[in-house]
View (cartoon, rainbow, N blue to C red):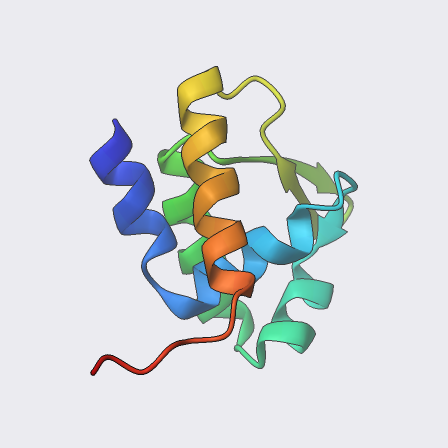
Length: 96
């Protein structure tokens, strides 16, 4: 389970989507597309990976799909997600 979560978060577009969803509110795929600079089909594929990993939930609202972070993640998975998001927010250091 942890490996599928890490694999899902390893892709920059998906990691960026999770950063946007970290505020706890719902975001439509159109907003995620715009902020990620992705096409609708590409963003939908990325969100499907996050959904399959159990990280997000989706809800259809007319023609839009709205996503939010899964509030029922297992505590150890939520801790992994938080650690990855925190690490991603840090500036990269050069390896000597």
